[in-house]
Length: 565
Ligand SMILES: Nc1ncnc2c1ncn2[C@@H]1O[C@H](COP(=O)(O)OP(=O)(O)OP(=O)(O)O)[C@@H](O)[C@H]1O
Image 1 (cartoon, rainbow, N blue to C red):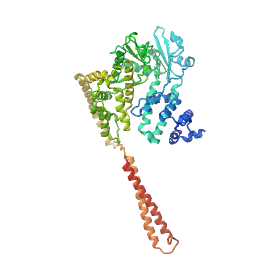
Image 2 (tube, rainbow, N blue to C red):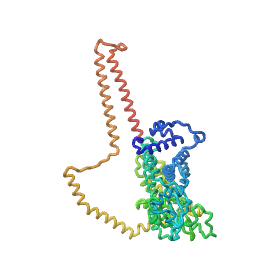
Image 3 (cartoon, rainbow, N blue to C red):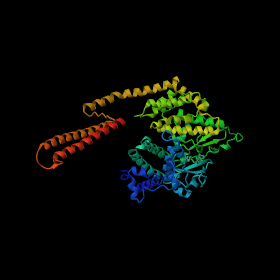
Image 4 (cartoon, rainbow, N blue to C red):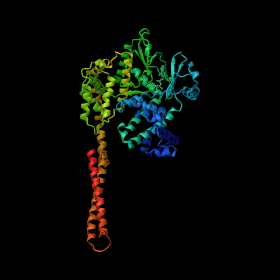
């Protein structure tokens, strides 16, 4: 089905390439179980290649990472996303996914020129006073060149790789179908919800492909951070920015990776930088609800005056007000060691916890928080605690909502950066006053009154609409066009059970008929015999025994499965 619905021959070719890489890295059996083996074999590729030497001894997480690397940018990015899912994968997997880097050879300027001409409306040399032909950096989606505008402003020009959008789209189409197939065919992968994972990934990657979108996020965040004058977000030059290109202020500073340069002699106060960085990101997360979701050292610069610049807003996380409230309760619960509060939020996050022992989950969360009882605030590693507490969900085969997974990754990365800057930096100590302040502002009378007023306005709007809605409902009911959609989750299962019961009942009737018929035949004298008995009567009884045994086995198996369920 997957192959039949592929859009182009190119997609089919790429699928074979993907399957080939999977086989080469030891996942031939998975290919077979996905029902795709024949496609490869028809393409002349053997499925049962033995893994050569060293590869045979490689652990599954390493095999997966090597396969993702070989499959190119889309899959490398997918692995990078999985690196943030401590709620789904164990530490050995996360460590491997974290090794994935998207640095690739740069595209020469001449190859970029036709696209640049289209996007800038002229040759780069005509638009910029200076344009560096050698890029500053080349990543999988875009590469960055330094340039100068005619007014003397130093800028960076981020250019999307020609053709990358088509490559990524084709890969995403295949990945979406493979995920659907995996979810249907591979029971072991079901708890990872492959389809949902790929859907979220595709959404975020498509957003990243639009280089203007990144600038919109940067401006939004910059607007939220105006109260923190020591935080810098590069200015966007919209006149040269569009989907495939963006031009932004060049940030002159010390890259987050060069900590040894941040000395007091050079005018840097590392403790202050750690505190300022943490305050900014905490504000983005708990107060503003839109945050830089990829704050790794390469995306941070330290500037003179102990200012901090964030760049690359290609991946931002968004949190609804409800999520922010939950997060606030979770963080305060962790910092103030209130197990009940933490458990409550985690159970909310677990969402559809069908078949999960919620009581047990609650006990585990409480035990987890209790182990920090009496530990000084300064020793709490908030990011790690968040990751650990959510990994309890993993053990119960429950996933974290995607917006929160992104947040925890950002949190851990930020906490690590803070500690690298200043070994005495403690996120929990830093966070507590801000968390209290957010709670205070959220529940101060004016804020409460504001929210109550908004709720009232929504209620009034609904009330205003009510007579019309009711009239429409009644009109439809009068015309017999009232439709009610009822979804019964287990209706199909019940239908199947009725089907099976009817089959068994029919079988019981056949057996009874065979026994009665054979008994009558047995009394008839003459005709062929078998073992001294009338042959047709004997065969009838034999058939009844076989059917009877089948019936007993079917009944035993179905009651056994019910017990397991
Ligand atoms: N405004 C800027 N000022 C100075 N340098 C910049 C700026 N923007 C980007 N760079 C440089 O270019 C590099 C890549 O930029 P950016 O992170 O935006 O691209 P990317 O394609 O998202 O890369 P990655 O996937 O590695 O994060 C940065 O690490 C930085 O060195």
